[in-house]
Length: 190
Ligand SMILES: [Cu+2]
Image (cartoon, helix red, strand yellow):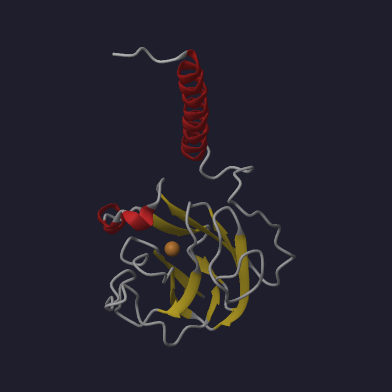
């Protein structure tokens, strides 16, 4: 049996250096996204400042736990996504919503009336894993901009200003599967 030539050993050595470098880059990427999921500087994250918004401003936070949730339907259904508002009630009239996505995937805010005797989080979910959005009063689903768009990217904000009569409202994220995973909260308008 022939022993590996010197040239062969050099090529093998170079190949393993390249492989180790690639692996460490991947490791840095993985650790970086775990250690700093909401922080600045992560390449895929957009950041933006909202303008001065009219009326009282309801701050809404959108989150999901860690990794690529879309490929983990079981964890998703376990309620690993959240929508929280910084207040549970606001006066009627002009109201703005400043929505910040602290998660790792796109989210949105949709404002729906909540009928008498209906409990937030109990809307029927269709075959597309979404709820019926008819009657929507407004939405913030635009990255670093007002109103409707393609979703608010991780780390970014979106906003919307609406006129709300007194009543109960449900704030939801209606991207496929997100309502069922826990992305809803109630807001009372006095
Ligand atoms: Cu969502």
